View 1 (cartoon, one colour):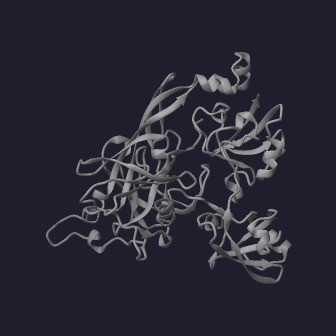
View 2: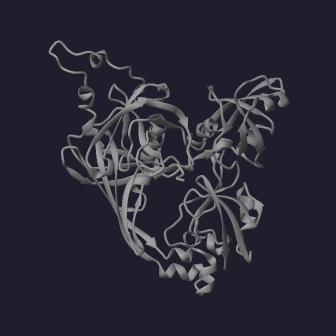
Length: 477
C-alpha cells in the first residue's frame, strides 16, 4: 500500500556512486493590494467580437516575471551501510575516520523563481531550490540567462533571495495574502520537469495548512497543479498579483494529485526584507512552551474564551518570564491579532526581528491582561561546539518552538545546518530532524541537551522524529 508523502516541488538529478536519484519540497513603501480576485466579468462572457473567455490578458504581464532557475553543486556520497554505527565498528571505521572517505559528487537541479524588484534584480525562490548550490543560473522568459548571486536563504521558511544584473526586467507585484479566502481563483506559474514555462489554474482549497516538514508554516493549499520544478514559482490571483510562492506537494508518487502548497506572500515578503537587509534571518522567541486551548482546558482554567493557546511552561530567565507571563496563562491575541492556535503565535513571534516587542493579550482566570514581551534570540548550539558528543559535531541545535499537537512532537531539539561530510552527517542526522530523547531521557531545552549529550558520554541513543516517522540512532565514539 502506498503512503502519502510531502515532497518539495523541486526536480533534481544527481549522479552518485550508487545510481541516479531523483528528488521530488515588490520591494515597495506602499501597502500591498488585497489578494482576493473575483473572476473578471470579461472572462465569463464572450465579447462582441466573438472572442472566447481567456486568462491570457491577465497573464501577459505575469509571465515575464517568472523565471527558470538551474543550479549545480556537490554533495557528499557514502555507502549507506556505513551510516549504521554497527557497520562502522565492524569495519573499524568510526565516524571521525569515515569523514575522510567521503566522495564529492556533482548534482544538478532546476526550479523556478519570481522577479520581485526589476530595478535591483531581486528574484524570490525557495531555499530548497538553491541549498548546496555552488552555481546558480537564472533564465528569463525571453531566453536571456544570467549568473545569480545568492543574497540569503532561510531554511525555516524555505525562502531564498537571489540577485541578477540585468536590464528591462518585469517584476510581479505582491498582494496582501491575508485577504485570501477559500474558493478564490488562483493560477500557478513555473517550470515543471524543465519543460518550460507552464500555467495551471485552480482555487484556494484551504488556508493556514501545516505539513510534516519542519519550520514556520502557514501554507495556502491549492488544487492548481504544482509539479516537480515548480518550486519557487508564483501563485497569482486573477488580478495578476502574487499571493504565494509554490513550495510543496502532497503525493504518493511525486506527481500532482491536486494538493499543492504555497508560502503566503505576506510571510515571503517579511523574510525577503530581512534577507535583503541582513543576508540572514534570526528567528525570535519569547521562551514559552504552549499548547492549543480546548473547551475542557478553558473550563478547567476558568477562562471564558473559545480560542487561544495555553502557556504550559515558562522558560527560566526567558523574555516571557521577565515580562511576567506565568504557567496556565491563556494567550488570545498578539499585537491585536486573534490567536487561534500554537502555529499562529509561533509565526507571530518567530517572524519578528530581535528586540521588537509583541503585545500579548492574556487571560489569567477572570482577568484580562496586556503583557509586552521583548522578542529575544533563540538559544542554540553551534556546529563547532566542542563540548558535545563527537558524532554531533557539524550541525546546529535549537529548541523546538510551539507547534500544533497534530503536526508532530511538542518538545525536542531541532537539528539544522548539517554540514556535508561532518560527523553529524555521518551519524545519519538530517536538517529538520527533531531529537525528542537522549539515552531515553526527554529533552526540550538546550541545557538538557548539553547535559545529556556531552562529549564524555560513552554512547548516545537518540530518538528522532523525521517527517511523519521516527527512528532511533545509536552514536558511539
